[in-house]
Image (cartoon, rainbow, N blue to C red):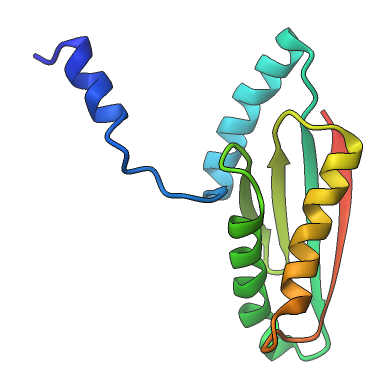
Amino acid sequence: MADINTILQELDSGNAASGTFFCSYDVFRKIYDMEFRLQKRTGISNYVVLMTVSVENADLLGEAMEKVRTCIVSSLRESDMATECSDNQFLILLQVCDDENAVRAIDRIVDKYNAQEDSIKADITYELHEQ
């Protein structure tokens, strides 16, 4: 039987990945539900972002999505989370921010994608919703 110190040491082992937490849609939904309950209690604003990626050549969509995913993970905070929710969309939860910072965070992703020399020409749009 483990004691609390052993369990805490295991939890704090430092093996957490760096960058934004990227997870499956099912995991995203469960964490979102917990965050929504916490937000109702604390009143701290979170933003949900639906990001859509469109390319002219459908054969290149998978490659474009992977590059956008890399930009998401490297551009947002470790406390934020994201998931791929369809073939051409990402869902992002920005924790503890306001409208201005939410737009700034998403613009950082788009700018980083567009700055890549080998990026596929894509139209990246997004919708913001405050929680």
